[in-house]
Image (cartoon, rainbow, N blue to C red):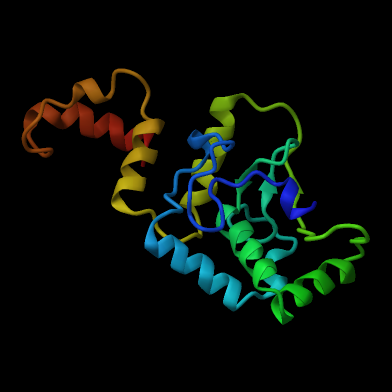
Length: 183
């Protein structure tokens, strides 16, 4: 794929991309720590880490058929930064792609991607993005984790919380349901 054809959650400068469905990005890529992670990946770009793998949290980004990045927004943004900076890191990545047998002729900024197949319901796509970000990736901030957990709760569970001490007798049913569903 060409980098310009991919729809990332944020722009390279950290601003939210209005064309990206916000329900598919559980991370706040505008945070300073996220921007530092992206800069670090770009500076230390190792093309082998952006290749084929069985894990959604590693390797080539996973995109939907329309080019929306479902897993790997940080990796994709790091590639964008590497390409914009030019130099050896971007060229090494391009060589890596061609060494894998892909023809990059006519592609300005090639990106090796994995494309999801089949029609997935919006709820399934959201669940996939949450799961892809929950495993083997940098930990969520407290706010990101709370937002992700809240989306995983079915209707009615939050109403079981009675306030006060979470360990209180009145909140046992809420805690039990929360642990069964989210944890």
